[in-house]
Length: 138
Image (cartoon, rainbow, N blue to C red; front, side, top):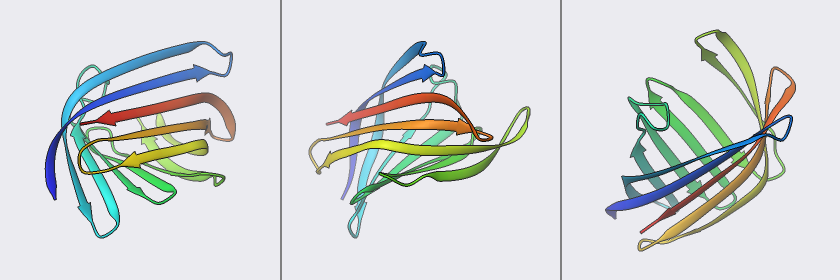
C-alpha cells in the first residue's frame, strides 16, 4: 500500500505561563504500511517555519515516532508514560530536549485516520511548554 492522502495537521503550544498559540496546516502527504507499522510522510512549508524539511511519522501500537529530515532535523519518540530525551543542535548551540507524553491516541486505516498526542516539553531540565498535535487524513 502506497497512497496519496490529504492531511489536516493542528498544533497547539502553551508556554510555562499558560500563554497559548496554535497552527493549522493542510497539505498532501503519503501513507504506507510496512509489516505492522503505518508511515505518514509530508513536506513542511514556510507556514510551519520548517521549509525544506520532510516529516515522517511512524505509528506502531502505543508508540509514535516523528522524524524530521532536511533543513530542521529532529527526532521525537512518543510512548505513553515514558520520557524521551534527545540532544539536538539549534542555531544557538546544542540543547537537551525531554518529551513526556500524557496522551497518545490513534485510529489508523488505509482510508482515513487520526492521531492525537499531548506532551510536556522540557529543555535542559526545565519545563518550557505543554503541546498538542492532532492529525487527520483522508
